[in-house]
Image 1 (cartoon, rainbow, N blue to C red):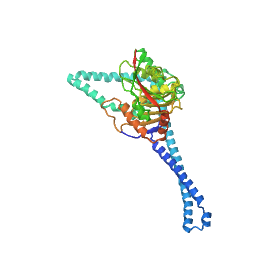
Image 2 (cartoon, rainbow, N blue to C red):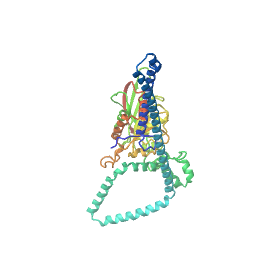
Image 3 (cartoon, rainbow, N blue to C red):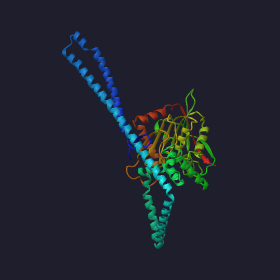
Image 4 (cartoon, rainbow, N blue to C red):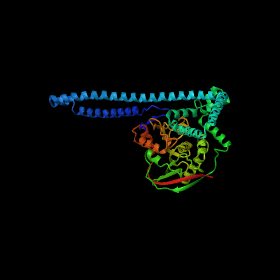
Length: 463
């Protein structure tokens, strides 16, 4: 595993944090040199040449005065060099990030064009794919019938094992980026299939005014699923339970560590300080495979589409039960689907959101106001955040880390880079980072974290 963090705006893949830290060090050096120059100036005024002459000072004192002058010149030059280096490194980092964003934009536009072409020629491609499927399916069926039963069973078992050994592909950063571009171009495939003129499709899509995009594609799949009798919403009930109280939250790791485990999906900490209105921190869990609860695939698809979901309504009900009112000061922290819900609540404007932390969340399409301190943590080989494309409408401090230098482990979890335990390890590195952008957003989020804390957890079920 790598401990390197990549910090920067959406689309940034190069690690410019070292450049930024070096620029910060040179700025600190410039400040220290300015202080040294000030001290020398005071000493120079106290024991200038006229005073030394009047006092009939020895020649060594005259040499010391000259040394002060030489040191002043040297320090001034050193300060000028530190300033130049600081500005230069900052400009290089900014240019690097700009070029990365331009490259990401070009890749997105190319993917959109290819997607449109696939949609436009889909009937022809479908016929070719169908013919190929029939040919290879018939060949496989014939081969299977000719094999003895024992050999046939062994062949199927070998095929399953082979597919299992290839699961690491799902955690390959290149595949994750491919999925991200594919998600962003899904609306272009639909536009091509519908025969929408290419220029109009580009104007309406993510590369233009953003009328169509990930949300409209998710809405289409949600509607298709509902028509087929799946992905249907229902009413939810939320049950409240007391939890052990804790100290005020500090940093990313502390907050991510408070995200509840099953069977609970929401934890709310109420901060009370004498003479002040209560403040709240809301922690929201990720998608669950447990039956009968709203943190399911239905809520995933509806949330991606920007529609009302059972999990979103459950969090609102939990907040109401915890005493959160419209306008209350709230910090939201969420993992996976919970991060998507947290971003949606922060963007809703119903509350005075003082901070937002998301981990492994497909929240790229949610327009979180730029005034909200926002920290987003992702693994470059985590497939889940890629399902929402990239951050187009918000500007979080985006911290990315690649978990595996080689192939991801094939045993155990299907998406190991998405596991919350791995994100907790990354959060520890985030807290330990000396990057000014991370320190600034965490300081803003921690600013109101004080007072007596009362904790409550909630479990939601579908009716």
